[in-house]
Length: 130
Image (cartoon, rainbow, N blue to C red; front, side, top):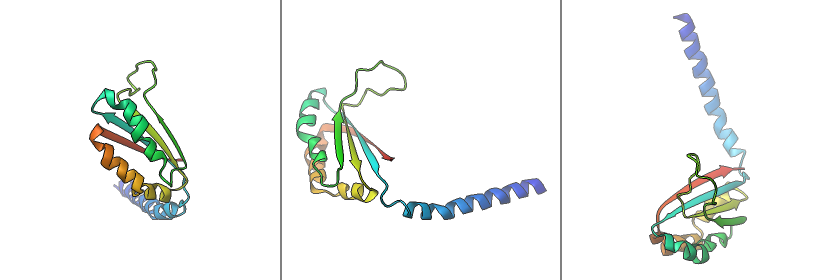
């Protein structure tokens, strides 16, 4: 019983110290660069060309986007771990978390959503700290 109590006490102290240091770590990273990876699953395969020509380039023109790349699934080997089911992918690079937050309210980004959201059935986003 004593060793169980000691274990629980030790784990509790370790968890508390980790939680206390978390806000300090996050506040020390205001210039954290990041990648905003967006996957669009469109309603119609026939919309891919228009989506890549007219729609997604709007995202690359948003003022806080440092770099922008768009593409379609590569013709790689079909494997269980590879998802070829999306239609268009956009990779947006930001110089800070604040820049990405500002992008979310950029008029071009909001216009893109309003004008083209009817074309997609699903959007998946992966934000990556670099």
